[in-house]
Length: 123
Image (tube, rainbow, N blue to C red; front, side, top):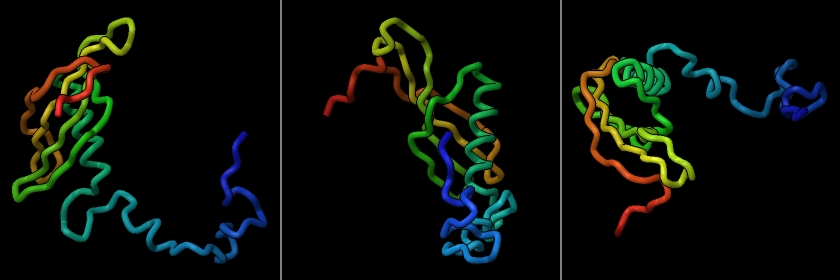
């Protein structure tokens, strides 16, 4: 079983005695509370977007390929498996653009691209 450095009682990263060489304020500065800018934490935005998209479409986002914030909310691009095939390189994937409001809730989505997993974009 792998052991993390801070699981080892004499480790240099053991913070049980306040000797941690990392700044504990940096690690705990965004533990689910609102960010200083007044918006939701980024991880909550991503989780909410993926969950709401999945509920609406029945599709699961495999990855988030971009995330941008504008004056009205958020825009994400996610990669989704639309049709599983054998071999896996022939599976059909799609890129969806997802729009979110300032609180991180889905306001709309659209498919922008569909492609086989094993094919690269043409340059």
